[in-house]
Amino acid sequence: MPAKKVAVVIGSLRKESINRKFAHELIALAPPSLEFTIVEIGEMALYNEDLEGDGATPPQAWTHFRQRIKEADAVLFVTPEYNRSVPAPLKNAIDIGSRPYGDSAWSGKPAGVVTVSPGAVGGFGSNHHLRQSLVFLDMPVLQQPEAYIGGAGGLLGDDGKINNDRTREFLKKFAGAFAAWVDTNAKQ
Image (tube, rainbow, N blue to C red; front, side):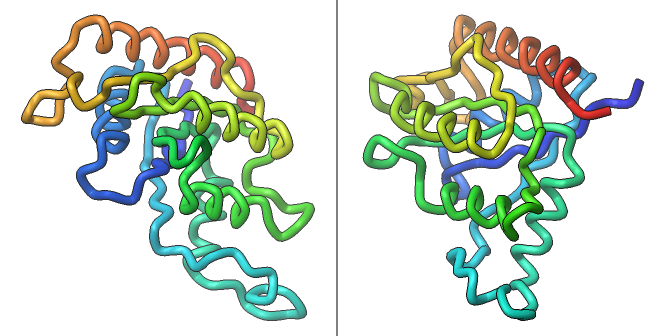
């Protein structure tokens, strides 16, 4: 059976973000039944229906993003928390992918959510706000294990790799559960 294609959407735009580093670590720990591609979100204009309504041609970055999500069997979100919610670029990507109305790129794709934060609560608010949007977008979301990575700065070495065995084992468990979730819920 070929590997399931997973689009990885990282909520932080920083090249050296903790979330990006954790996404790479999670990808490395995942079983071979999943094939990951990071889908960048930083180059897209803010969603404005005027840019594609009334016969207008949508921005190429939007079209490219939507196509990359549609080609995936599943989506993994790895994001920080900004002000108890998701970062604006991630919300923008969600909105762009959900349009035009009736042609959502997200619909039916199994999803996983990992929030990573230097703070103690591990992005709890962001995780739950994102899950609310994913329910509306008709994305079955992995329920357990929940993944809130708090104190993340101390869990990575200078090389950007996880330096904590318990965290590594947790992410490996999450990756295995996500693989099983995708296998069960991805459209055939």
